[in-house]
Each structure stands twice: as C-alpha cells, then as structure tokens.
Image (tube, rainbow, N blue to C red):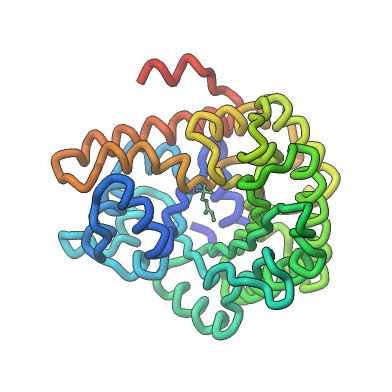
Length: 341
Ligand code: 13P
C-alpha cells in the first residue's frame, strides 16, 4: 500500500469503511470492563482486543483502520502473533493514540488542555517502526455556558496543540487524525453545540494553516451537532444532519482527506441513524464516516463478557454494528435492518 499521506488518508475513509477506535486508555477500558464484570489485566485486554481484530467479516469488509493504545500496539496474540500483524492481515491500517490525556487548564476552572507534545517526535518515530500509519490526538471542549466554559483560551490552546501534533505526525510519515471533541455531556441546546463547535473548528483550521499542515494528509474526527445529554432533548437525525453539514460547510476545508465522527456517548443506533442522515443529504465535499469507540464496541463487549465461549457471538455483534455503520457511511441504512439481527 502507498505510503503517501494523502493515499493513507483516502484509504481510511474508503467507501463505506470506517475506523474502530480501540484506543481506550487503561483507566477507560477498566471502566468498560467493570460494566461487564471482567477484571482488567494485560491479558484480558489482549484477549478482548484480539477477539475484535480476528473478527474477519467485520474487519475485512467494514473497517479501514484501528486506533490502538500504546500497550496494544506492542502486544502479541495468545498464539504469539503481534496484534498489529493480525490487523494488517485483514487489510486494515494500524493507528495509534498519541496524546497523554486532557488535564485541567491552569487558571480556567472547568476547561482542559490535552498534553503530550514533549517527546512526541521520538514517540512517533517509534510508532512508525511498530507499524502505525496514522495517529490520533483528542482535544476535549466541555460546555457549561453559565460558568464561561469553554474559554477562548481553552479553544485556542487546544487548537494550537492539535496543529503542532499534526505537523509532527506528517514529518514522521503518519496521518494525523485531528479530534477536537465538543462534549455532548452538558445541558446545552443544539444551537449552543453548533456555536461552540463553530468557534472550535474555525480556530483549529487557522492553527493548522499556520503550522503548514498538509490538509490532504489529515482526517478530521469531530462531534456531531447535538443537544447536550442533560438538556433532556434528543435531536432528530434530520436536525443533526442539517446543522452538522451547515457547520462543516462553513468551517472545514474541502481539501482535507476526510471526516470520521466520534460517537461521544450516543446510543449505538443513534450514532448510526445520525451518520446515515448526514450522508443521505449529500453529496458533500468530503467523505463522512465513523471512527466509533463505544458505539461499535458496547454490543460486542456485552456479548463477550470475558468468556472464550462467547467469542463467536461477540464477533457477530461487532460485525452487525460495523455493517450498520458501513451502510450509514453510504447513506443506505434503514431502521428495519436492526431488527433483522
Ligand atoms: P467514542 O466513539 O466512544 O466517543 O470514542 C471515539 C474516540 O476515539 C474518542 O476519542
């Protein structure tokens, strides 16, 4: 496969394919395992992820790439095969989360800044050798308007860090996924999500231009425009699609390699229905697909529940969700297809 950044980016959003975000930090995967009553150890994390990477139907047909965590990119399957080789054998591209997490932003209570730039150049060179051809950096923008969150300082600092990260990735031959996640956890309405997302994306692309990042060799991983979870409102797929596309047309250059959404706490079916509605009102200047963590993994996690005997059922659950999102990435999903499973 081509090593040009723009070719890698294009492969990541190839027709109907999307990304599996399996890059939960050790803390986050422990939270997910707590829910299914599985102890989080290096071996249980390996077994769980090996189950997904060996899900042949899902991986070969619907998944273009997998975002890994540092531990996972170095791990070997139970039979000694590196997990990276199992992913590559399915035709999917290995990727790596490289940020060190969101920390409180000094002087701005309620805001965070994502850390991890120090030493990043060397870590990227190491990850390239381990097989990674794309990376991910997640900035977190919370919304609490009454408290002045997010501040302009938070949006600016996070956009600047994303741009420095993206430039370093490209020097290393790695496609940067730039992820400025505006959280859906708050009590805000959909209009506020739109406004904050607009300020965030506007600043992000200003910083990416200033850092001389080659946009064709980048993937944007954004939130959809939605009402906050604590607002008590669920935005319809049609409204989500209309506002999300309006936002992107105003702020996201047509030159970028593509767009792969995060699921951000939407239910599995909501994340699929919204992606489908977005693609159904196309054509658009960019490919729009999925880079889901929770919305792809919740069902297989539950089906697996830490038991080897459940591997086939878990792989089938993963294949179903991946298939539904594949159809949504093409604007061809129908709610009735969920019942069939
Ligand atoms: P969710 O789809 O669970 O939001 O995770 C995607 C991701 O990679 C967040 O950084």
